[in-house]
Amino acid sequence: MDGLSRAWSSARFAFDFAVVRRDRPFVLGLAVTDRCNLRCRHCRVWSAHAPHMPLAQIAATLRRFHDRGARLLYLEGGEPFLWRDGELRLADVVGLARRLGYLRVHIYSNGTLPLDAPADFVWVSADGLHETNFALRGSNLDQVLDHARDCATKKAMLFTVNSVNHQDILPFLELVREALPGVPVMFNLHTPYYGQDELLLDEHTSALDPKTAVEVMRLTEEIIAGDSLTAIVVTHNMDQAIRFGHRLIMMNQGRIILDVSGREKEELTVAQVMDHFSRVRGEVYADDAMLLT
Ligand code: SF4
Image (cartoon, rainbow, N blue to C red; front, side):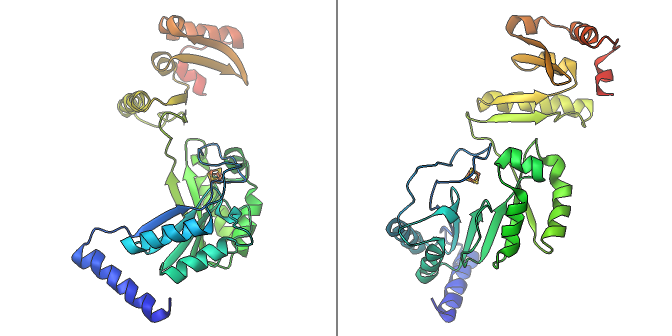
């Protein structure tokens, strides 16, 4: 598509979208492969063996959605840079999309492979500083940053925030400012997959005032029950630990010192838990607030 046709297509779309308000899809997100070289803890789509989508099928899909109005293409996976069809690589898919009239092509990548397709924009995922990112995604952050630095295309880092990595937000911004000057960072909130995901809530009410904490715990229960989630709540609040959930596990210096569930848990009191903790530690605690010190 030459420059004039591109400009005409953009103007026409803007007119349809903003003036006529015609109801048409604008963005096509296409997972060209489910294969991935990572096993991110939050991910349910990766596969080691799924076949890549053949180029003929990609072309047919691009044409169909272009006819319906799509002009912005997001190439996703799996890891899209793993995509193959014979000798063809992701750069060929980008070229095809341009010839078919897509105005902009974005790629979402885990950054573990060279980011060498001639797209308009590349989003590179990393979910925290080195240790956190490795624990969550299994990728080497230095390698990901190197690939982002070597990428000639405009790019941004993509950070999915969850209860494990939220502490890394500010240091991550500083790291990116140092390592990739001028490269923006976009933050997404992690969305658990219904009925399949563990929701890790790490002291998610500790900074709240008592009234708000009660409301947040009420909502937490409602969401967990409504979406059939398995949730692990970390708390120093003994009353909360006893009243909510089906099983209570108490830890001391990395060891489990109490593990109760069902009826036994229902009948438990804060005083009993504190007494048990005091005996294990050989220290006396007047109330559970002292556990925070
Ligand atoms: S890089 Fe993407 S597709 Fe691969 S495991 Fe992680 S989230 Fe899933």
